[in-house]
Length: 356
Image (cartoon, rainbow, N blue to C red; front, side):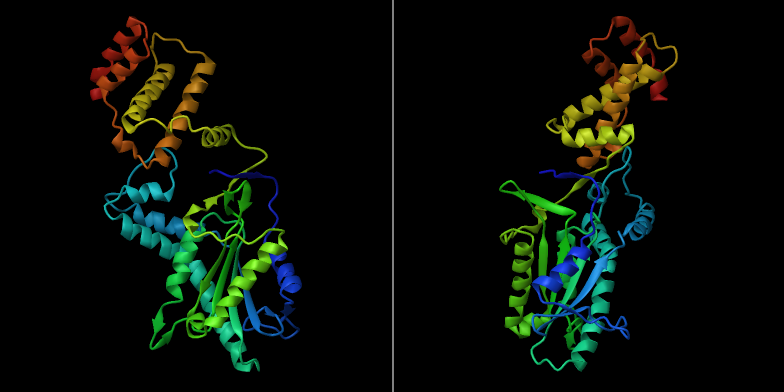
């Protein structure tokens, strides 16, 4: 189910910092001589230490570089207009391999934060007098679409299970909590934001540490005025569609189509027929010497319908090569429109040129 929002988006990190201080009795470890080797907060009477990391990079540069590399593939598909990465991946000869490359490239931002936190929490553990200390990495996503809960959980779950030598690679991170409010789902009429808890090696060796992940989750939910809601399927969370106050005409068309995707129920062959019809009407509107005169409103409608067609093809991961242009199909489209015989004959007269 699509979820929209409008207006200015307040940053999440400042709210989380207040929550840590108020609901977890967090004491800031920052001081005059603080450096990046020290975690951020000591909480719950010194039993929980938290390193807070904010995802400020949306991963655009990493994905642009990867896309430039993938375009060199012979099987890289061509779409009309823009399309989600998923659509490109599904139309290659190695969708699983490319999907893995995408996850690894986007996941670098997460792994970099995990590496830093592992060092900081290790350094703190060596100087701390606490015997039973739970070490948590808290990652806050500042409104980036790319870091969806499913991808994040996949990257971090596998990361904390890596072995270096004979020890876990990130042995000094007991728990990872990931928070985002750019992704959500509707449950019982309420918008639910995900909070992921990924257990590290410390929870495997000391099972009692797992309770601190649940404690964090429960207190965050109640801090925001809700009862905790456990969701097993994290793939059910969708990216929230942020609607700007002002938008260009084509962007507004795209928003309207996302709200009412009227082509969604067509079969692929029915969509192919509609594709022919849209292309024909736009050709008749803009080709010279066409005996059919169209109004400005009709030409605008034709452009908008073509925009809707591009969005639907991208949603279904249909590359333009799957709907090849054929002269006979244009004639059939003209007849389905019940165009005057003169117009149909004119379209037929173009068949030889189109074949060329």
